Length: 211
Image (cartoon, rainbow, N blue to C red; front, side, top):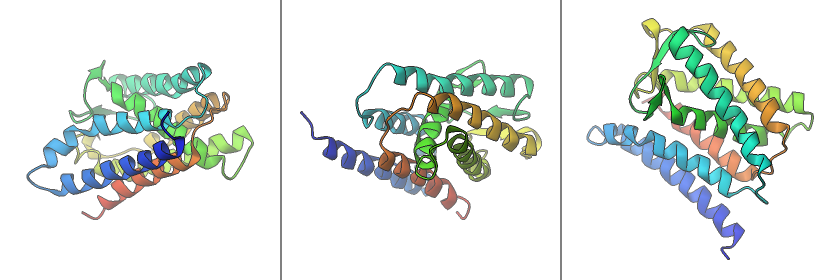
């Protein structure tokens, strides 16, 4: 049997390997397009790493993870097709296969961000309302940073290139509901993995605010 401590340390290594490789590759004029096209693989791998590091995996975890995944798909579908929740925007090509205009990987992203920020929030509070609000604020704050690079990376772009305030309010409300549903099931994820995942994403997109 593979040692759990080894899996955890190896997971952290992979998280940062992909993050640093991605930053370096995207900044390279020769390989930027290829690295950006690999974004769905990176997100999927990160999601799998979080799942692999869950102690005592049980079936209720599937339901818990399905909540932010499904909610994410619903609000994104309303957004790209009707301009609801977030405003008028559309997805580019670098997030992979789409269903009714929504990349499937963006639903995975909703799930992994909810899972990682829930762990961070629970470091400070135990009450589900408080932790859901903190998690939602962390996700919305991250979106503020990501929005700057999203059009450049051909992830998504808002109409006229302007991100409306509605988008951030939509993120906060949706993330809060996603957290309430997910945290209800008290999934025993690895806090150290969640922290590394969230920080690596913050570092990744913050760097592109300057380069």
